[in-house]
Image 1 (cartoon, rainbow, N blue to C red):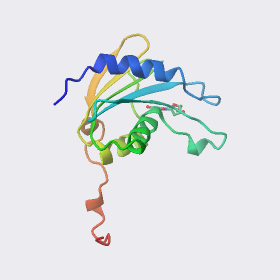
Image 2 (cartoon, rainbow, N blue to C red; image 1 turned 90 degrees about the vertical axis):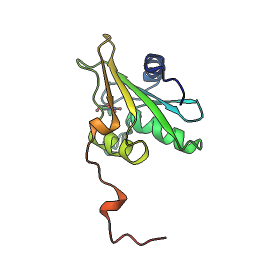
Image 3 (cartoon, rainbow, N blue to C red; image 1 turned 30 degrees about the horizontal axis):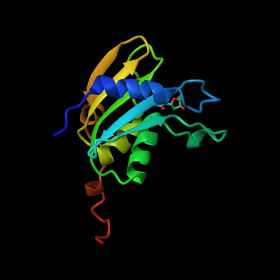
Image 4 (tube, rainbow, N blue to C red; image 1 turned 180 degrees about the horizontal axis):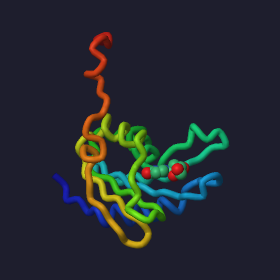
Length: 138
Ligand code: THU
């Protein structure tokens, strides 16, 4: 098991936040995802004039890691200029449940407030493939 430097991860998330594309909300969010290979994948929110297809920082990091071939997700950090350490949205919690159901997560804000949590704590009862008993077996 590799050592997890959650504060280092939060620093990478802060840099990624600077690359966010947020012309609509003007609310940049950064994420960083440490994977089993030891690589860290940054994420930022990427918005769109069709608002509903906006991508959150957390899912951007997850999708980048999957696209790069990662299969093991070790830890994540997320940061925004929020009053409290930024809480991931429900959609991101469900996305985390699928790929990293019990992963440590450090949430932060620009004022230095932090909350250490986990994907399991953020979404204790996610929807899973087992909830679709009629799913055809491949
Ligand atoms: N957002 C994230 O990227 N992550 C979060 O944890 C909360 C919300 C983004 C989505 C949208 O681009 C902006 O923040 C405002 O909701």
